[in-house]
Image (cartoon, rainbow, N blue to C red; front, top):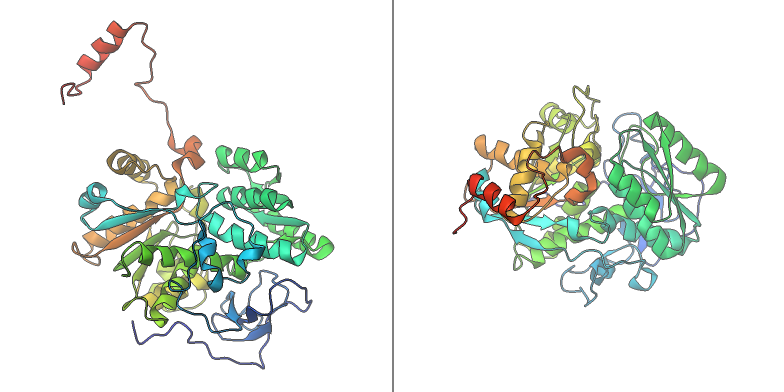
Length: 445
């Protein structure tokens, strides 16, 4: 993998990116331009990000953009300052720490997980617990950047299409910044997350059609210049490329917390691949600066298999898969992922593993019981993917594996918590002791 540099794009200044309108915002001293992650077509730093990605690639294989920094980026770890948030890596991000809208995000623990690791057949397993972020999901790494950029640009309203985590996160950071927030969503979103969004003061607009969520956001951007953080065109290329930069810090922290080494495998739940793409960018920056001597291989735990199909076919354009079941992992239940996710998997020599509902709640409960980590249902799909690849002989028992748990299990309790036959109220302590005696619990241990 050392022979595959991250910045392997052909820089074609004659090409152009979609978005003819210009708008102020990104610090020109930091971001020089945007380029397409697939063909290298360039656009100025103040181009409108309209979620269509690269104009040249739209008709063949829609692809997202990435920022190119005006000054060569230094060693991410060597330049880290003593902030108590991910903004200690501000020198690697598209706006400065002085512009940051922060709630103390990042610096989440990397926890050894020997019991669940032994169960999966990979004893050297660690969990990067992103549920410890301020709104209890990894989306805070995106939102802190996106809202910081939006406020610096003078936006008054930020908006997103979200099934839960992204909306809750954006709402919290908008509140912190003194901005208004609108979240478009759909029927079936987890109730706890919708309640969380509303508690932050955001306006929630549930729509019957998922496509109507996007139409509304497109109209809002055109009419009122709202800052839209999420995709609102299809096929999806990914979220706002500046927000995705925040996910690089997951890779920085994993290496810091691992005494300067990268794992053999890094496994994430994947919908449109924002986090996967950002984490891969972070590892590649560390490798380019000599902070790590090798790159990890990535694994995408997906639901309906679009990435698996694309890896097998060699195509850049992902096909929409038929949704054969309603996934309990609602936050990653898309029928089609993105080129940015596919690119990260290909460059890392990675894999995509489709995960069904089978065993999902049982794995969630085992992780909680064995390691004290209560994860959202989507966040335990990496553990099932690890077990699958271990059984196939792809992941070895001696490999060091990091699974990224992206959100807390409190997020979708209405999906994961069934009726508990043992929930009962005891009238007296004698009743409680009789029940304990009959329960099979070793009371003396």
